[in-house]
Image (cartoon, rainbow, N blue to C red; front, side, top):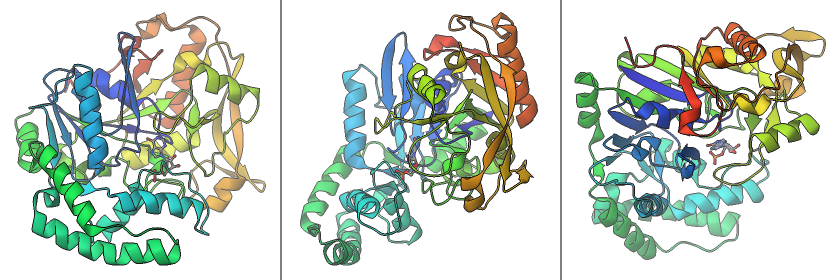
Length: 429
Ligand code: IMP
């Protein structure tokens, strides 16, 4: 039984927590796309961990954690995360494996990410400045450096030479910044290669064995469907496939081996960075959600934009991911709101749209059409099962299920691992 867990909205849905919760029953946890732009927060018995690159499954003893070929890796950052986990008593050795084929983020990617945001004419995306986009550009442009190259001086030197010829031209001539030294980068990145050598492996046979041996593999999505390079609110997206298909291309496990796809969604919506967000609330309710939900980015600390649940988005997400179940998080944040709104359609220039439009001009002008639900005032943070939830919370969940056409299989009522409960099949056949 193999399971993909991914974000339904614009990321930050609480995937880290759900993955950590499900990792208990898994044999292996695999990251398939993105890089350290992700921020997965997990709270275990009041202790908070924030992971950006290593699969959240590492917080469970004995789980194989794999960083797949679809991921872009900043090796300097990865070593820092390994050190952070070690310092906190988490054992990584024997558990972490990194795909030889994963792409490497270099300092010029980070610089180009920042410069393209601050100095180029194309306008801001609001990226995390981690070099994600430029690293994927090199991968697709067939210039990229892969993790395996960090173990080969000759290849790394050649690739750096080729890359720097063009990169340094752009950096110095277009942006007027300082050029990078090949020798210095070569020395630094060979050093990272030496430190990470024990983790860099051919992950395909490892995963194939897991899948064939009927072990349970959990595919950990990063970001969310609306940030997907193909299906998201382009160009205000990240540069990878955060949707279910990415789980196959980013790991080498064929789609036939994937049994279920669980979409994690907040009970409302948030977004960081620029781009259209039809249900955004800029009033006191938005402020309430930000405060109650502690909606500040785990990676950049930026305040998240907050708004009502958008069923047009989640219906679209259910379709493009083939969702088999929903995990609804942060239900407790809505406690105390008298009337909760759900967006069921968009109005653009007098026309009503029930399906998500590809035309971003249209989306930017979209006015949400709301269905109003009654709120609840009871504290739900200690509830352990569905039947223990107030009637109005249950009605709200039922409505989300009806509108998305997907059953809620996991519900979460607080940040701790213990504040999560299952109400459907996860690993069982
Ligand atoms: P990039 O991935 O750093 O290139 O950023 C592109 C867009 O994706 C920006 O709007 C970021 O705020 C957003 N983004 C990237 N990673 C995450 C994440 O893990 N959660 C939420 N938004 C993200």
